[in-house]
Length: 65
Image (cartoon, rainbow, N blue to C red; front, side):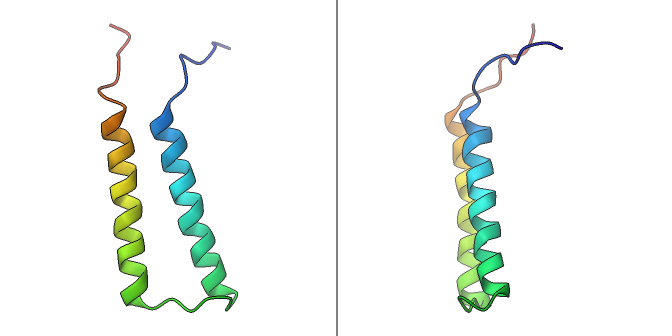
């Protein structure tokens, strides 16, 4: 088994955003919060934007050459 090349902050941030969005949907299904389309669409677009921002800030991937 080979060791990992290094820490990838884009993957970490993307994972945290997806988990937070999933938690929000879980709270909606458990009737803790009531989400409507008007609230859910900006949250979904914000999650996508956060993932794209995190991937863009990490720069181009360094290939094995």
